[in-house]
Structures are given as structure tokens and as C-alpha cells.
Length: 127
Image (cartoon, rainbow, N blue to C red; front, side, top):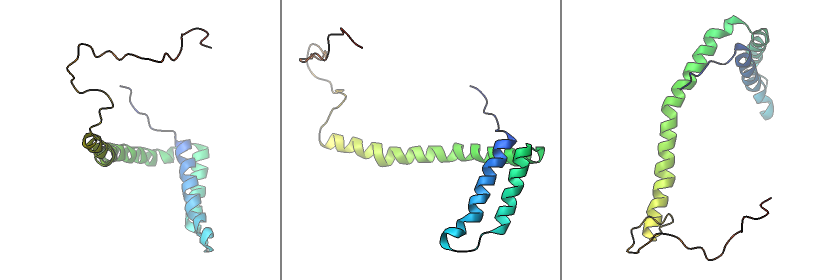
């Protein structure tokens, strides 16, 4: 398994420049005043990001660890919700209507071979 690497300080700085720029300009959508503090923070991130400054390294590592922690805990929760809210009810409904889409039920027959009546192609002139 390969080790996951922390992204570059340049991309980290540019991403947070965009985030804080959006935070600063968002009030304009509701005809409010822009957030000056956010624009200042945004410009600092842009300057440090374009300069590829080492000052961003601790913040970048902290952000990376936060993302890894989120992935460790949120992903199983989301997948569990998908399973119990989508897959399980679908399986219950299929059992209620006695459907066997994968043909897994055991039957008393000599062969489980599926005979095809209509042949889709003869494998000549495939392209």
C-alpha cells in the first residue's frame, strides 16, 4: 500500500485563497457589505501560496491530518447509512415480492445452464 502524501504548499495556499475570497464576497449576494477580514486573509494565503512559502507547511499538515481523520470516521458512517437506507430495504422488498434476480435459489434440476433462444451476434464483423 502506498503512503498518502501531503499536497504542496502552493496548492494549499491557492485553495484557501479561494475559500476565504468566497467567504469575503458571499454577503454581496444578499446586498450586504463584504467581509474585509476575509479578503485580507485571502490575500495573505494567495501571496504565501504563490511564493510557495514554508509558513504554510504546519497549516497544510494540520489540514491533511484533519482530512484523514474525517475520512476515517465519516466514510464508514456514510457507507453504513447507504447500506441500511438503500440496500437493506431493496433486499427486503425483493424478498417480499419473491424475486431472485441473481438466480441464487437452489432448484431441483440437472443443470443450471441458461439456454439462450435469441443469439445476439455471431461474432463476425465485430467492428
